[in-house]
Structure formats: structure tokens, C-alpha cells
Amino acid sequence: MLAWHARASDVIESRRDAVLLAMGFAVSAITTPFILKLGGTTDAGEDLLYNIGTIFFGAVLATLLIIVGRNHHICKKKPEQKERLSYEAFLASLPTGDEKRRDNSRKILHCVISVAPLVVYAICLNADAYFKSMGIMQEFGVTGIVAGRGVNLLIYWGFSYMATMEDLARLNAFHLIPGWGRRWLRTSIEAKEHRTFTAAVPFLIGHVPLLLAPLPAFFSTSFVASIGDAAGSVFGKRFGKHKLPGGRKKSWEGLVAGMLVSFIAVLVVNLSFEPASVIQAIIMAAAIAGIAGLFDATVTRVDDNYMNTFVLGAIAWVLYLLLHA
Image (cartoon, rainbow, N blue to C red; front, top):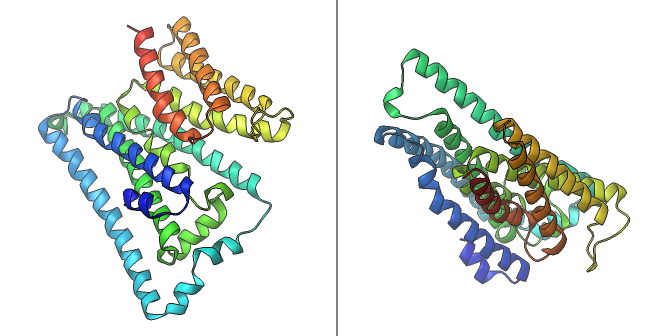
């Protein structure tokens, strides 16, 4: 469907983003089977996890089909309804002057998404300890870490899938989106996304390959992509006086703030997991914050969420392995 959109769309940015998104989904799809298999589960455990995933995505797909089918049927019987629910009419009705509030709410959501895996891992690790103490479900070989990966995998894939389907409907058949979906878009979509895909999906799907990485590398990347990026954006919009070259809206003040918060976040993450590795943690924090700042200052044609997950994640993964070899 993304390939079809890339060929059919008249908007260059939308075609480019569809290709990038398809590549992101492909990379994540290739790594997904290994996320569970490399955790030491038995064949029965793998079957259990894949069955849970199948049921979950089957329910998601069935829900989407019911919604789309219902709205298609209504608009087919009432053509005036389809005209009233056109995308152009929706864009014309959007309130103006609240872009800062929209951006801040999205940054907060990104931070929540990055903190959520910590909660998931904590729950799964405690559940694993309880199951082991009771001697139940041990035949599956599903450890707390693997269970945490599995749950986070469902979260990332589930929301990425639903958001991408919403974007495809929004850009090609807006009348198929239900009322609650239109209300959500009204409070979340930014002006730069009106003719292309939302930036939330690469942020989500970019976490999937990193589930294979050591936890310090995973959370370092996730917190830089969320907390560091949010800090730079909020501080830059509030205090930014000196703009980066090239006519960009970003400022030097925001860039420095984002790098500083990224450094602190990565340092805290690495010291929390390995308190004895102070030197390695400082090197890791300085390197990742510096690279993230370089991306923020120089990369303009590719969305930050691709660079701060797929690319920065790979760098953090390799750097962590080199420092702890």
C-alpha cells in the first residue's frame, strides 16, 4: 500500500516519505523474528508468543476493516456524506495559532512512549520471578527480558500499523476515517504533515530493531529521540535567538539544550544499568549527544525520527559493544 501511494501521490514529500516508511517497515519486519528467537525460548515458547501476536494483530486488522467497511457503506448510500467529510474541508476547519500547543503535546506523547518500555520490562521481570518461584510456565523458556521484548514489540507494531493505515486513509480516502479518528487528528496533526505522513510512525517503528540491542543502548537511543529532542524543541522555541544557517527554524540555543539533556539522559541510563562503568558511560553519553546534535544541525531532508532511531540506534548499539568488549 505504501508503494502504491508512492506511485500515485502528486506530492513529492509524500512520495518520498512513503518510500522511507516502507524501508523502515522492511527493516523492522526483517529483525522481528529474531527479537523473540534469540532470547532462549523453546519451540513451545516461540509458538506461544507468535500465537499471541497473531491474535493481537488479527483483532487490530478486523477492527480496522469493520470501521472502513462501515464508513464506506454509509458514504456509498449517502454521497453527500462523502463530500462533507472531504479532507480539504477538514483542513479548512482546523483551528490556527495553536501549533506550539500541538507540538508540545506530541513531545509529551513521545516521552511517554519512551518511558513505557521501562514499565513493561519491570512488570515482565517481576512476573518472571513470580512464575519461577511458583514453578509454572517454565516449559516455554520465556524469560522476563523476552516477554518484555514481546510486549513492546506488539505496542510498537500495533500503533505503527494503525497510524499508517490512518495516514493512508487520510491522504487518499478521508471519508473512511471514523469520527474519533478525525477528532484525534484535529488536535494532533501539524501543518507540515497536512500533505504527507505523520512523524510518529518512524519514531515507533524505529524502536523495533533496537529491541535486539543491549538495554542501555536501547534506552539511550529512545530517550535521546524523545526527551533530548523535546528539550531542544521546547527550549529553542522559548529562548532561541540565533537561528541555524540555511533559513531553518531551529536555533543554536535549542541545539545546545537538546545535546545537554541527551548527554544527561544517556549518562543516567548507562549508570543505572552498569554503575561501575563510569568512564564508558561518559564516553557513550558524549558520543551519542554529539552525534544527535550533528544530525539535528545538518540533516534537513530526512525526518528527525528516522535519524534518531534507525541511524542513531545502530551507532549506539555498535558503540556500546565496542566500549564493553
